[in-house]
Structures are given as C-alpha cells and as structure tokens.
Amino acid sequence: MNIKHFLDQTFTESLSSLAGSDTPGIVKQAQRVEFGHYQANGVMGAAKKIKTNPRELAQQLISTLDPETFTTEVAGPGFINVHLRTSFIASELNKLREDALLGVVPVEQTKIVVDYSAPNLAKEMHVGHLRSTTIGDAIVRILEFLGQDVIRANHVGDWGAQFGSLLAYMDRQSQKGESLSTELKDLEKFYQAASALFKSDEEFAKTARGYVVHLQNGDPKCLELWQQFIDESIRHSQEVYEKFDITLTRDDIRAESAYNDDLPIVIQELGEMQGLLVESEGAKCVFFDEFKGKDDKPLPAIIQKSDGGYPYMATDLAAARYRTRVLNADKVLYVVGGEQLLHLRQVFAVAGAAGYIQDNQEFRHLPFGMVLKADGSRFKTRDGADVKLIDVLDEAINRAFALVSEKNPSLAESERQEIAKVVGIGAVKYAELSKNRTTDYIFDWDTMLSFEGNTAPYLQYAYTRIRSIFRRASVEALEGEIELVEEVEIRLGLKILQFPEAIESTLEDYQANVLCNYLYELSGVFNTFYEQCPVLALDNPTSRLLICELTSRVLKQGLSLLGITTVEQM
Ligand code: ARG
Image 1 (cartoon, rainbow, N blue to C red):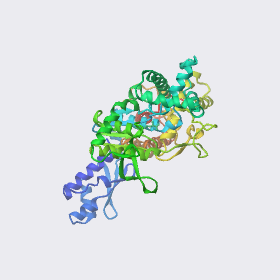
Image 2 (cartoon, helix red, strand yellow):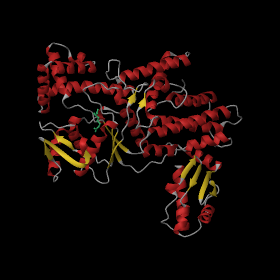
Image 3 (cartoon, rainbow, N blue to C red):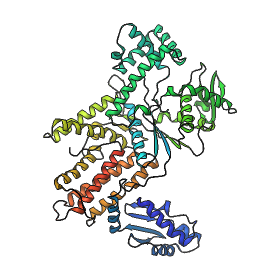
Image 4 (cartoon, helix red, strand yellow):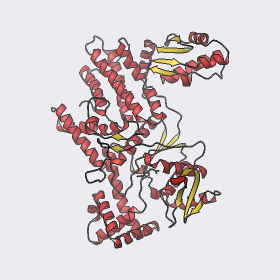
C-alpha cells in the first residue's frame, strides 16, 4: 500500500462526508512533514465553502477517523497533524512480507515507448552515451516493475553523410587486400582514418559523397558494405550493453534507416496539410511562430533538403508517426541530451500539427546535462578524442577489483572479480543516477567508488551486512511477526513502508535521484539500527530478523530498478 494515497483517501472521504462531495480533498494538499508524520491541509477551504469554523470542522473530521491507525491533532488555524501508530506500521510491515511488489501498487497499464541510448553507429560508443543509456534503462526497469507495457526504442544513427567516407574507405582497404573484419576491430580508428582522408584527399572526398548518394539510392554494393559496417558496429554496442548490464537487445534497435520508406510519405502528408510545408531556398520546411532564430528571424524545421536528402528531423517525424500509429503508444519518452531541446520541440510541434500525436498521447523530452571532468572541462582523452565507453567500464571494474582486494584479500580471485564487476558497474551507474538529471555532473572515480556517502558501494555494502546476519543466523524459515519497540526500529519500519512513495515520486519527473536518495536514507537508518539494536544476541530474534529481511529486499529491489546488482559479501 502507498501510505500517502491511503491517507489522502481517508481524509478526502471524511471531509466529503462532512462538507459535501465536491469538497476539494485534502489529497493534494496533504504535505509530508517527515515520514509517518503528515500534515493535512484542506479543511480551511472546505470550512469556507460551508461557512463554518475551520478548527471545529477539523475537530469533527478527526473524530471520524480510526484511532487504531493514527493519532491526530488540530494545529494552527485548521491543519491536522497525523502520526501513524506503531502498531499500524508493524501490521503493514507484516503484510509486506507476502507482497512481491513490496507495497507498490501496479498502475493502469499503458503503452510507453522509451527512446534511449541511440548511439550513432559510425563511431564507437563513448562516454557521452553514458547518461542516456543509464537513465533510460533505469526508467524502463521502473515502469516495467509497475506493470507498464514498455517498448525500448534504440533509435541508432545508421544513415547519413558520415557513412559515405566509411564505405569509401572500406572499399579502398578491401581493394588493397586488407581484411575488413580485422580493420573494423577498432571502429574508432577506422572512423578517424576515413574522416582524415575525407579532409585531406579531394579525390577520396568526391568518391565518399558519391557513395552517400549510391547508398541512398539502394545500390547493392554500397548496401552490402554498409550492412557489414553496421553489423560490426551493433556487435560493439551490444558488447557494451552486456558489460554495462543494460537491458537493450538487438530487437530493440529500430535504426534511422528503418524509416527510409516512410520519409516520402511524411513529406506527402505534411504537404497535404494546408500551409504546413513551405519551400525555402529549395528546401521543404515548416515554420511556426514559436520558433525564432537569431535576430528574431523565423526558424524553419527542415524536413527535406534542397538536394532531396532527408535530415535528422524527417527521420524523427517518421519515428513519431510510427510510434503512435503502428506501436499505438500512449506515451513516448525521449531520453536525449539537453542540447537537442530545440530539435525535439520542433519535432513534437510538427508531429502535433500533422496529427501524428493525438491529444491523448504524450510526448516528452527528458533532457540531461553533460558529464564533466573534475576540473569542469569536457570528458575527453588527452588528445581531445572522445573517451570510449568500454574503456570507462573496464577502468571501473579494475579500480573496484583493487579496492575489493585491499578490503578483502582472503577472498578467492574469481570471487573478487565477480564482486569487482558488480561494484564497478554499480558505481558508474549510481554516480550518474544519484544526480539531478538535468544538470551537468562531475565524473570522479574516487567519489563514486567510495564506501562512504551516497554511493553504490555504500548501499551494496549495507546489503551485504544484512546478508551476513543471515549467514550467521542460519535460520531456515522465519515464523512470527514483526513488533516494533525501539525508536530506530520504528524509523526503519517507516522507511521500508515509504518505498512505494519513493517510486511514485521518482516517476513524477523521471528523476532517478529520488529513488537513490530514498535507498541512501534507508541504508543510513539501517546502519543505525544495526549499531543500536542487537539481533542475533536476542533470545527471540525473529522480529528483528524479519525487519532485516524486509530491508534487504527493498534495497535489492530498489537497486535492481536502477540497474544495479548486489553480492552476498564484499
Ligand atoms: N543518434 C542521436 C545522437 O547521437 C540520438 C537519437 C535520439 N533519439 C531521437 N529520436 N532523436 O545524437
């Protein structure tokens, strides 16, 4: 059960019975002071409506409430302070033991497309893809946990001008007798060599431009080279996803090229919309008053370039159309960097005007900031190149291995390696997710791998602490009930019950840091409990063991929603 919803409902019902059914419920105004202590506002509005004294109305309302569940008191001009009773908290915890969803109530199922990761396949995945991939994957995991029908959309860039040089270079190397599969092992190098040639060698550049046109006209030889390149590149990105424990599979890829056949249809449909398409300098554009460029000049959304080519915008319109018309999405979330804000605003505006998005369908951009180095500069290698994502992940695992070996040298090497993967990958993801998504964040190895503070290792360690209690307790099945006595025990119980609220608030603005903070607080309360409340030393440890078990379940579940796993010891 979601405690906040329960309170909202109880108070609304009582208030409407006293002041009429259209009384603005306390619901939205019930504000949490701290968990377990709520403050209900709304009586004042109702009292005004039925012209009565608010404190009196509050008093009346209180008398209708179940005294077994909470204690209440009128405060100020007519607020109600609400405290959950310890016995109520304990009985809710006992119910939770049977609940696989840990109190979370599934929502009405809708179809949600989440557009995330989406690297351009001309290059290897780099650190710039960290955010979209991590945030997007956490969002899909949470939505699926709530029972939503989620479609992962990996809108990879596999089409466009940069493939001209790549194909020309592939062709040239294979004519030189080089083995392409060896050449493509390092996509980044391959891409750099091709673009260097494009800049320095006019003849090559001409061939490359020709290849783009051939490719777009469906020339079989070009398509074959292109396919070979794309396959290799997708293999690379899948390797990254696997290492990074990301749920995207090949089946989730719907690449830009998948929309090729839809592009002329988009043009036709936009053209048929009176006045939507305008020719400007040979290009087909849509102009809206709300989009202004420099000097207040109208800013076009270019749908087809003067040479007949289709830009990024066109593919995105076709994708929007596909998502609502073919996939029947109720909601589409774009986990895409803040620098594409204007682009996506234009896409949504044009798609809306074209009827691709209906009123009951929601399109939403979830932007994020950049990943920076400790000195605030952009995350690049010494020579200014993008840092490969796979290298970041390997370094995370290596660093975690060193830490684990230092902390626990007696563990077998294979075990330490297993833990290093979980800790290293968890640390990178958590560092990302625990920050407000819209701001830039500083990528710092020492902070993210620290066992202190709001980090993955801290949470993972709290989990292993609980598991170690169970190893020592060697109990089979726990029979009995939770009873709450000590203050910190009650606080821990309350925190556990707060899980559904944490999930709900996380989805309000798709901010994973809300869930991170919750898990951090939960671990903090647990650690205090662990220090203050003996468990195994008690004659009957059942109740405390049950509390420990629930805590570990919430921690493990919460972390798994963030895409982070746990180990039994570290
Ligand atoms: N491939 C694009 C890039 O790397 C991101 C695509 C995001 N999704 C979208 N539907 N535009 O910038």
